[in-house]
Amino acid sequence: MELLTPDLGLIVWQLVVFGVLFLVLAKFAWKPIINSLHEREQSIEDAIELAAKTRQEMAELKSGNEKLLAETRAERDSILKEAKEASDRMIAEAKTEAQKAANHEIEKARVSFEQEKTAAIASLRREAATLSLDIAEKVLRNQLADRNAQEKLVSDLLSDAKLN
Amino acid sequence: MIRKFFGKLYFSNILAGLTFLAATTFSYAQEHHTDSSSVVNEIEHEAETVAKNIEVHEEKVDLGHMIMHHIGDDHKWEFAHGVAIYLPCIVKTESGFQFFSAKNLEDEHGQPVEYNGLKLEHGKIHAVDGSHVLDLSITKNVTSLLISAVLLVLIFTSVAKAYTKRGMAAPKGFQSLIEPIIIFIRDEVVKANIGEKHYRRFLPYLLTLFFFIWINNMLGLLPGGANVTGNIAVTMVLAVITFLVTNLNGKSTYWGHIFAMPGVPKWLLVILTPVEIIGIFTKPISLMIRLFANITAGHIIMLSFIGLIFILKMWAVTPVVTGFAVFMNVIELLVAFLQAFIFTMLASSYIGSAVEEHHH
Image (cartoon, rainbow over the protein chains, first blue to last red):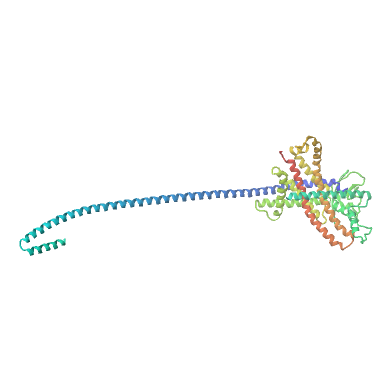
């Protein structure tokens, strides 16, 4: 049973050695090691957290940018559309205006032409009447001299009149 | 997963330990009755039946004595036959302390002689007149203990220095060898069993425990090494300290589970409470015996293999036996880690159950 009987001397030594070993290691080894490990892990954890936070912020920023871009694009489109509408409207207006002005001019020209025409016709009528009267007068005058001459005169007069 | 695996393993180890214990006690009992047989003589007997044609002379090697001598403590450190360091003896007798070299207790033939009224009997110092003596000698185990303590202090203070010097930088060199082990013990053993809230308080003790057991297990495997963790006095001290740490930190939940297990009918407590009270003591006793038996059994197996050469007295058997011994040595290297791990694991789980604040 020697193997199973704890030896008192060894118990004392084991207590002393293990106790001292524990105190020395706890103070000079475990404390700095555990603290450093803890610190390092904490810093790694913090770094990971920060990275995640930054990534999220970046994503937020990016989505904000995209939103802004989309808004700007929409605004640009609407401005362009408005401008196009305005220009179209202006062109259309100008066209109508020009058309109206042209029509007015044409109308004016037509009216003045009608007036001229009427005047010309009237003067022509007067001329023709005078001419006829002259011819008639001359014919009547020539009738009194020679029959042939009278006829000739008439035809001459007629051909003259045709020139007009 | 890993815990399940080890769980299975240490149960088998408990079994192995108990079987070994039973075997040694039985053979010891036999030895006391018949004064002749021992464990190894049984092995020898088997070997005889296996190799019947080999004649074993009666002037046989007392292998049992040799093995017991090897795994036991001694006042000299014998590396080979005749090559020994005589260790200092510190003995408290009725007349006061005596300091002397163990060489004085032996004559030139290695036979015990009387010195200042003291004499070695079965490796222990006794007073010739039969009075009580307290042997506080630096024995082989104490020397090994001191060497391991110095090694541990050197290793871990240098690692600690690396931490303070390198700050938060990644570990380097020896530091990066030790760091995963420390983190493994901290996270998988201590934190897993004691819990986030209390684990830091017990971490220094449990780390010391783990590395102390591990390095002593490994030093014991060296040729000529002492069998420190296979000595019941050493494991007893470790178990008692763990017992004290556990029970002095016991919270109300812990004691409540022992004296009045919640959720159990009152009449059943009559049986359960004594069982739980016995459990308080069987836990450290199992720690003590498991480590002692596992390490001692490993030493006995290896010595038995090597002893076979001397029993069979046949050169041809040497390679086979050497192969087996090397195989066992490698297994023992694993056991050295495993037993340190298991001791720490169980100590953590006992402490964990004591500090747990459980709410049903």
